[in-house]
Image (cartoon, rainbow, N blue to C red; front, side, top):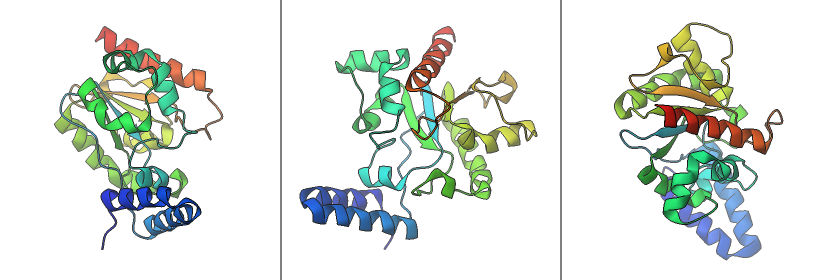
Length: 220
């Protein structure tokens, strides 16, 4: 039987309730995902302000049932400190957004998807062919949903899209991409990967890139 996010969530909850045995059970769930991967559902709808595009779901995030679920990932802390999330935090009356808020963000103009939907323990487990094969599906989502901006997290998530649209093997620059690459009304934006393994950027750098994205939204 295929592993689904729903069944994984039930197993994960049971694992938390069983202490040390629960930790072993969580390990078994993660191991099962490697053999028969589940995924995180897209959290998207038409005409959002921003759809965040990750590389692919980690098996840990799938077990938890939320995007960027690891406490060490910089996405939620940086997003919470940025101007980009100010309207969400004000509306919800909170100072810090957490992974469990991902399902609420569509009501505030933000969504989530991935360049490749197959879950894996590490992003490096995804092959170049999988990225190339996923481009058509990803672009079709943008054509249908027409977010104002698709914000890719890291060059690895964006590289295959960039190569298809430009015909160039050169790596793109961070920030808003040229208008000629727009997908309908959707502009493309490249932000650093918020993974803590990305030593080229500090947490403050990550906040600054989300602030730049907020500036673009404010101007348009």
